[in-house]
Length: 214
Image 1 (cartoon, rainbow, N blue to C red):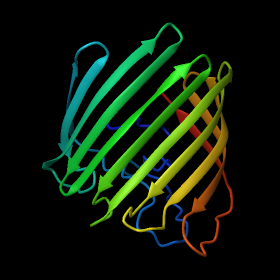
Image 2 (cartoon, helix red, strand yellow):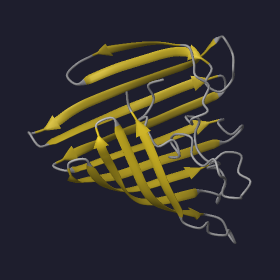
Image 3 (cartoon, rainbow, N blue to C red):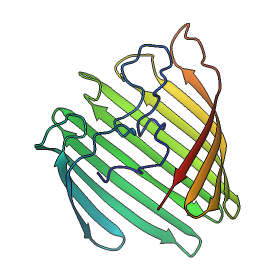
Image 4 (cartoon, helix red, strand yellow):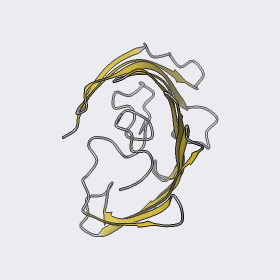
């Protein structure tokens, strides 16, 4: 469904998050949009509105529960605009409902010269049963040459906001290379921090991702 930024890094907490857990026995370390998501049967409608505002809404079979019923409702209001000739920006409000899961979020960003900043924040009720979870994504990209970007990124996930500890923070530095317009190669170094007394800080992660578009 058309929810949020839909970034291509499925390990971001606003997507699927960590699949190799941080050894804290957390039930989940990210939201539901991982690579193993059930592919839904979906009906989506998009309507251009005033100026750069667009509304999309969809109904679909379950993303979480494998059911043939139309149990998922997703909607987004998205605005694209510019300031002068050099700055472009976008902002969006997102909403999803499936059974007792409710997600609301905001996303957006702006681009100036060779710099692009994007962000997303989502609150999920009952993604972890009986709890409220919060996921945040914040990235700055600098296009140093054609086909090469340096990126700095901050990811945050609090699985149970009612608790005073237990949140995960991830800091990322990396480079993204586009040797062809159908290939992306990501090289990243990531450090995870755990907000919990006596928690062992995980070792740095070294990540290589490759994406293809056809």
